[in-house]
Length: 228
Length: 228
Image (cartoon, rainbow over all chains, first blue to last red; front, side):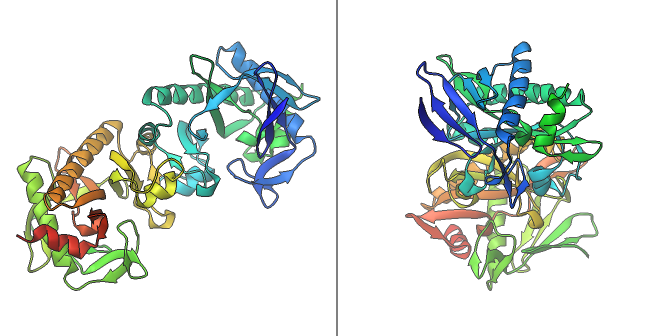
């Protein structure tokens, strides 16, 4: 088993059978000890955060599998905080795809002249480049195509999958009376056919969720979602 | 004649016949005395800048008219540094539409991970909001539509006009062995049919132009373009 990537919240190993093993850490993104799913730095370390994030990820990836939505997921070992996945290649040097149901965070910072805080957004999709040095800039469909990161046909698939998956997560949260405000995903190409599938994770650290108008921290969200 | 808008580089008056009069100032955008077409502040005042900008604007608007590309232009008085135009309403609180032929400026600052300085771009179009407080954020076609600023049909017209006009300006510059790197435009809706037309100006302050690999300042560009 060979370490091939050290990430902010997880490490990636290559297995002998060619699949990848993701090891979830107890680190979550944020700044100055405050969680922020949009941040580029590890803001705090929380005992059990890795296992909790993996548990929720496993739950969502299995729901997506039931619904026939493609992901890289194979299986998970909660005790070890590891997940086995199919190897995927990312678009360019990595993209984040955001699905927004209410105006908060960077959307509001950019478009506050036209949107009020908390205003409903209709599963709005936007793409940002993973580029810490340039604060993850937003990028348009045309620019992705021109720079050779993603074709227009791939963009259409990516946008459609993002809204489908966002809606699945939103519906799952709604079962616990929790409202999804926004969520970010990563996608990659897998296999010889370069099928576009969801990769990485779907945990509290990827989304902003509210209950009775109050923001729910990632660990609390994972607890609420997974309790019987 | 009534002053209805005080801009950074020109003032707008309403005429008795309902048309608008634009009065070009000698102020150009930039920071710390250095010209920057992307800047939100007046960086310097140059004697004759208003008349020079208007002269070049008049030239381009007349070329566009010959080619059947719609603008708000009616006529110009160079001595007075004024231009008479049809009244237009802007999209939302104002947009800038940029057409890029080489990677420089904010494009490079955002996408430097994927583009090299000066790399050729194929009349790439992007839209930014006019919002000084939020540093004129870029905005996607989907967001413009969702926020009610521009419909998808209008976006298609805007993008097509931007590339057509960019190509006209590029070809005009090429006649003087000058290369257009990027240019920004403003558009508005005019008349009862809300036709989308080019508004504002096309002067040195709107574009980055190079000759023999060297950047040409706006006043110098206007001189080179208008000399016999």
